[in-house]
Length: 150
Image 1 (cartoon, helix red, strand yellow):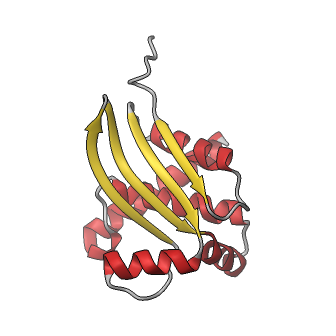
Image 2 (tube, one colour):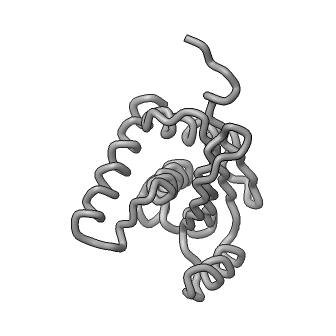
């Protein structure tokens, strides 16, 4: 089985906030892409704070408040790689949610990352009904794959 550069997946991670390791985020994303049988795709992840994600949420969704995760799908092919898009996660919100839900920051960032990936694939839980059901089924599938693999 050949594994050329074009077939490999690539995850680009940028950290403004640094409580979660870049290598962990890369590993979680690569495992999720593998569980989806995707090859030759690129994904960008940015971990930021509430202030910056509030600005993005206001600009792109018209909601002047911080949120936990935003997804910006691209779905373009560049140099043989399909660029899925960008995921932006607020570490500040993730920390609050982790405390509220009683799990670690890593577990919350992993959950938000998977949530963002499902959005990049074109699913939207905010549409309700069958679309919402499909969204959360795929999200739960990926989270279970990650919990078994990692």
